[in-house]
Length: 81
Image 1 (cartoon, rainbow, N blue to C red):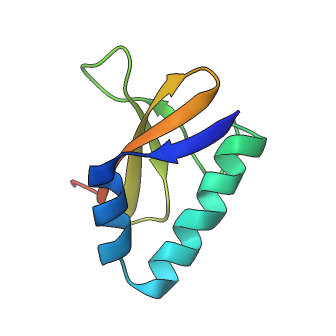
Image 2: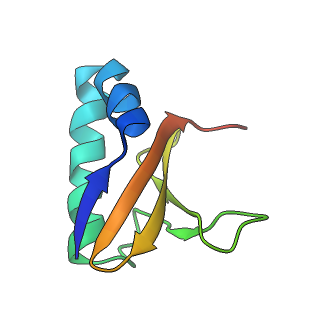
C-alpha cells in the first residue's frame, strides 16, 4: 500500500511545525509498512464506517480512508480532546 494526502491534508501538513512534520512522516511510513504498528493506534473513527484515525503523537492525529492500493490522508489536526 501507499499513501496520498488530499489538498486539505497537504495544507494542514505544511502548516505544522518541522518537528511535528517529522513525526508525521515517520507515522505515515509506519502506516504503509505496518498498519497495526502500536504507535499508530489506528482505529475506525467513531460514527463513521470508512474513516480511520491514526496517532502522530499525544497531541496530533491524522484521519484517512483505505481505498486500495492507497491510504488517503484526509486531515491532519490537533487532537480534539
